[in-house]
Image (cartoon, rainbow, N blue to C red; front, side, top):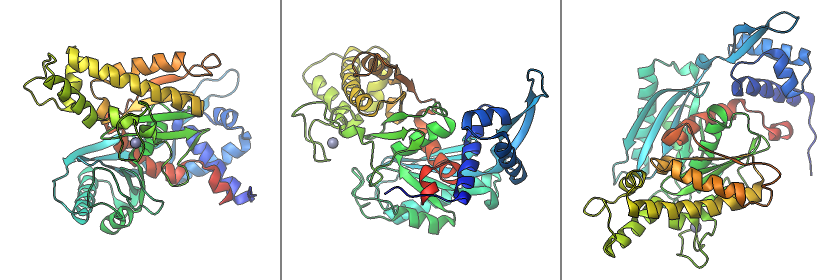
Length: 402
Ligand SMILES: [Zn+2]
């Protein structure tokens, strides 16, 4: 049943609402916060005074107003807190040290040496995070925590469960181990949800109530923000867009389904398709070269006919999935991002935008924006850092009743 709530929780919630209004704006006055958040001027004024005292928010110039006195502009103080975001991908680990505004202060990428056991990889993550903080001169007292974006499936305790493409990582309590090695609290999520939260905190979805993130990495995932709340599902694994069927009776997918968008559109599937056509004699600048995903995307962008043909086919299948996502969720915005969009984001964007403008049932009622993430291939690492800010500061309806 629905739970009731008590006044102290309302106070904490309103504080988070005000802080979020400041964070998602590019400078905002107290009057504007009251209008947007539906709070009284007095409530906003009391909360802002506290945020100023705590040093989370700063006053930054003023706006002229009609008649009355000028309105003071409020911003989040970027130096009020920091988080290290770690994106753990089967092939590489990306690190971002981000300030409270979600801006990267330092970045680092490291390959995962094959053969390392989980304990060694986690120790390496901890050492690297510590080194980044030392080099940037950020004291421990300013570190809000570490955000970790991992390939799913994950469980609620921060344990990895049968992650595809990572043998030896089943039942690894990665959250607890990283906390032990760093001494900082660790907030974790799957990479696609982290990317969505990064887009909400620091990217282009800062003021969009409902959006979906289509994340293209080693695999294909998704993140969901519905009516201003992250939606994680029963087991933290909502938004597995990669496993929407787009080829009836298509190839078997490791997930247990057939013809999944991931089974035909992920980098390894793209490589397999190109190699098969090369062996059938298709002409391409890729023949004789490595024909890996990076080379294929670069060739498609440069107009190579075979690479472009395959990428166009992938774009069409992604568009099929996008139409299903839009029909199911009735969102305002679909964000496209992740490392596997490099060089081909524009091609994917145009095909998907055309599909969601012409095929969903509700297309005449409102337009669905399709945008390429400005956070680019670091989306999951910046998102991982944003996980910490989001967990610390974002207004969560659940917190009212928990
Ligand atoms: Zn699947």
